[in-house]
Amino acid sequence: MLKAHGLGCWPKTTGGKGLHVMAPIAPEMTWDAAHEFTRGIADRIAATGTDRYVTSADLAKRPGRLFIDYLRNGRGTTAIGAYSPRTRQGFPVAAPVTWPDIKKGLRSDAFTIARPPKKG
Image 1: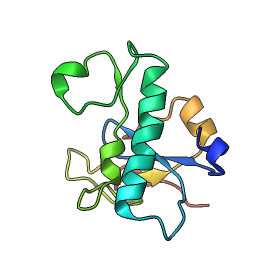
Image 2: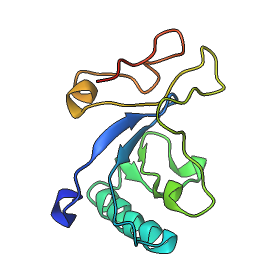
Image 3: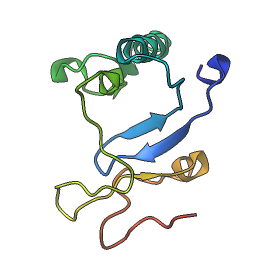
Image 4: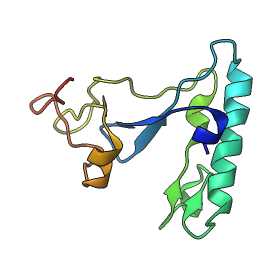
């Protein structure tokens, strides 16, 4: 879907349970426009398999389904930055990775301060 909009993308581990899909957007896109754009993408993905995907942050609606969190794309929301440690056991680190890494089973908490990602 992103490619259809002329956007390349890459995965980023979060150091937690999730994976962020990163995509560059036009610098002139407003926060509200980015939020609505990503909400549309998330809704289209969720519509392809309502038994597999959910866009609701409500924990009661999420068991057994993949949460597509477009909410990180709103003004005032936060997301972990690349190469940043999390304040969790072992200090996992968020890092950009490749799609082949993900296909090989790389976990979102694979990197830590003690086991940092290799750059380049």
